[in-house]
Length: 363
Image (cartoon, rainbow, N blue to C red; front, side, top):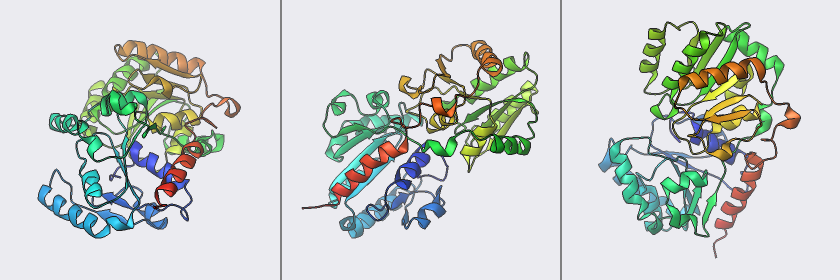
């Protein structure tokens, strides 16, 4: 968990929220002062253990986590480390040192999204991850190729845990749609949406370029980008330079994505790379026609109105967005393939509940 309501945080909340708390309970080690969903987690009876951030306070980090595991490891049956790279595997190292029997590493991305140094640390730790982890989970086989390499994918303790959502929360609701569009002051505009951290990986600069071309043909088109991140200033400058301040909205971080999708007419997701996006699953659960990049894995395409194309030409994206806005529509709930699929959280949570409960039955 970080202080952002991102994909990993959403996945954890979706997964643990469906697990019976009388059978399995979770505590959280975090390295930010405030953590996303902290009130919800506390309401579930979870403890939030705050530790220093290793990158900023390496000595304090080592001292605090060593003491924590020394004093508390005997209370826990498993540690489940959800990360986008192997740059820091210290939680697993200390869990092993102090005797936590089940140690799961869970992959959530398919490329290095951080600094060159963290990329080097990832490659270094990839060679020794089997010294510390007992189980290897991943959001997709495609992501595992970078995260783990081929050898681990052949182990019996390797498993793909599909990112999953509760699709019933996102079913299309025309009443909510009307209210959301009123709050966004959209009126009769055709609305394109994007959800994601404002980061190079999510490629929102490309989306703005494509939208600028689209707007020349559909003047009542609007683009709303939901999320926070380090590129907010750069994106706003690009919007200013394009003269599209009235047509493109940087909405900031959402606390309720389910209602946001109701307002949209099209979901656009040109990421450079993805493990398997929660936002894309949510958009499909709402039935939205979606245009996504080939940086998304093929198995992320579930519904028939999702189009996966390269990000080599903004004009192609503009043309396809134009077509989808004027020809395509939401799939009907009865035709929505997310419901009851492997991306339905009810399917994934049953496995995890059984796994963790079994881990708690020590001989």
